Image (cartoon, rainbow over all chains, first blue to last red; front, side, top):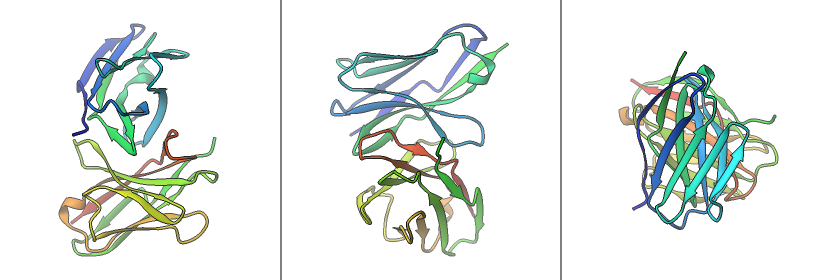
Length: 108
Length: 113
């Protein structure tokens, strides 16, 4: 069946780059998304990529898509303490299928 | 920037009672969704709604659940007879068209006692 997997935790130092990885199983996904959830808040759409693209850059965020390996990554350059949150990968196939989320901790 | 709003932010209800969760989607969006997140688990799709009809629903969305767009702005999720396992964060989302990005509200935390 459809499934999205992410590692659960990532810890980086302020100023370093963070790379959050995600794998998915259904190759018919049209879009792949990254959402951010801060404590007590909802899901904030960060960025997304169409399945026929392999890279998208948006300021400090870079999304890489390897469709052959069904692998998606989110790179955050110059990570700040305000980037500490849970990051969810999701694929769209008629509805959103989410991973469990990666908790990013940024140490000063 | 327009946003999806949900009320209440926290709802505490006795088991067996009915509960209605409310959402105001972004005004020019045509597709509406409910998702839920049980503590420590994945965000799960419940139902999508378009043109005053359910367009898709998951196995979770059984006969205890219903959705409605009672007027031009609100979109509601009703749970008819709540169970302990319905305790979760419920998120409403909307999108302009079906496969475009979905924008989420801040969620309603539902606690069933």
